Image (tube, rainbow, N blue to C red; front, side, top):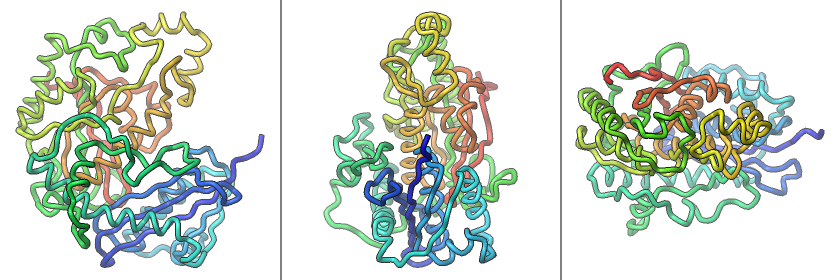
Length: 428
């Protein structure tokens, strides 16, 4: 079987060095003829070099998601190319964890080469990086609108992407739809603004410090720096299907009386913590009921994000584990061991990860340095924990999450992440 070979081109920039920064990365096929994936992200205030490393990391991660085994990295950053090739030493403290993270990604491929190219030959990644930096003023405006409570809380998503149609040949759909409340704020812009600090009031205030701590540095041995976006991951309360332990995906059972009580207790616990910027939730009713209880107690808005919806279990919806295994024994066994295998008529865990990762990027960009309550379901919450831990899909099958339980994941501006809490139910 032939190995998938790809070309990764990446770039990053900062308007001020340090200043509002962003990165861009593009994955081409081996012939440099077709775009397979694109990545771009506004990362807040950072230096050019940090943004360039973030672009490299994003490009390598995209190549890994595509299943590439051989990667040719092309960048116009002499520093990054020489350091990743081992010819120059990484000396700057902010660069060491980024270089280490890039090397860990490199170790997952069969072969990776690094080549310096002139900026003119890196125009695609450069364009994406500039688009990411252009998002600084948009992120600031959206953040201001959300804080003022002006953004609508509807769950519909725009029929167009954030920059038009998805790139041709991109199976990952990285030019993704954003929530309608983001599009409406964007459409309301009369003229483009430049030089805005998208960190906004949240990132500039000590009030944005993590709950119960004074922020930075990251816990453990991650080496992450900066103030993280902290996601308080709350699973919805009990429904009739959860009592019966049936697959409950896109169906919409309401909360039971106990489920509403669980939501109320979780809301009381969150209100006691305070310092929460917003509540974001899945569009399904059981999540929205739980989210509305929390938002009411916190006196903050609720915003619906479709990417947080539960897995589509297709034909297995409403079945027990045993019933699904008996109905489709071979497929069910494959599904349990391979995240690329979808449920019949439904979606795979890989597809869930794609949209949850897109939702995570949106939230980190819109709420830098803030605390958010994210009300969702088992699979999306496990996926966010998986992303924060940087581990494989086995976590999806081994981690247990109780109804109305709380877990906490943090995502740092330098790309680092950590998990502070898993499956707390002490308040129930």
